Length: 316
Figure 1 (cartoon, rainbow, N blue to C red):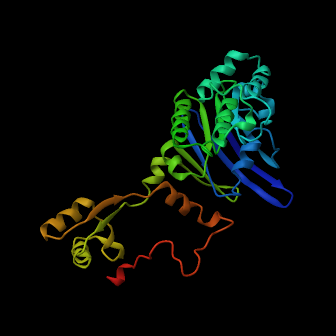
Figure 2: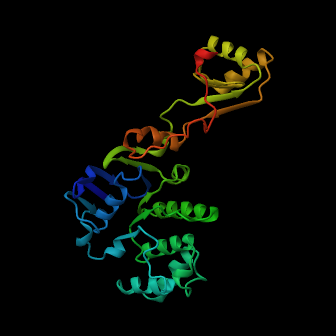
Figure 3: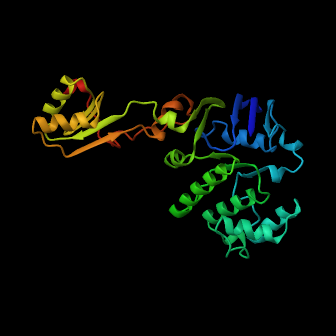
């Protein structure tokens, strides 16, 4: 378990983490989300004893990292896959870590096989792709068979097969009862990987919630495409629906389900070209939560809309 209690960290005048309290529990994959500059990396560095808190504390199994009797056997971490000397071989890098905890070549071979680098152990790290370095970083995190695993952006640089692999892998670690904390900017991946989400913004906790609960938090909408959009809109309003948005033949409907929309279309012999129930994505939920916590906000280039605007209900 990771426990962070009233953690504050300043770098000179910059407040990176602001009175942060949260718990990462075993048996779950916990996603750690937040915009750039939200304090995620700083928090993880404090957990791993790489930075000292200005106030508060970060504990792993009830102890500060520096007080753990065997740190690599308690917590394994991947923060920066590039922090390996490029002239070292993958096996050589892992052997140096293994030696500090009394492990030998057998453990090195085991973790290389575990991450899919069994045939690359003798290669120099400088010849590795970014995805291979990520795999090596995961292997290093697991060298001590730790109870707690902390991974910062582990899917960065991985190909689609690698992304599926890391998703399955971390869920397997959690199923074994380990504590797994994963930071990522890929919302679609986190929605498939994380059981629980911790969202931070400007150094403070924004949300501490189960992934399913967050995704169920918004009312689903029904997207219907029909050449009779005007008539369909009138029928739906009469049935108690709300037309959230409209764009030509497309309606976005709330308050009724797709079955109601389909039945109305059938009863009134209206052609329907598409009928889809849309639920809020993790990306949408995340953007709502962190809307006021973003330091840099992009704006579309004037005159070149990214998507055609949807007209509001009043235009129907």
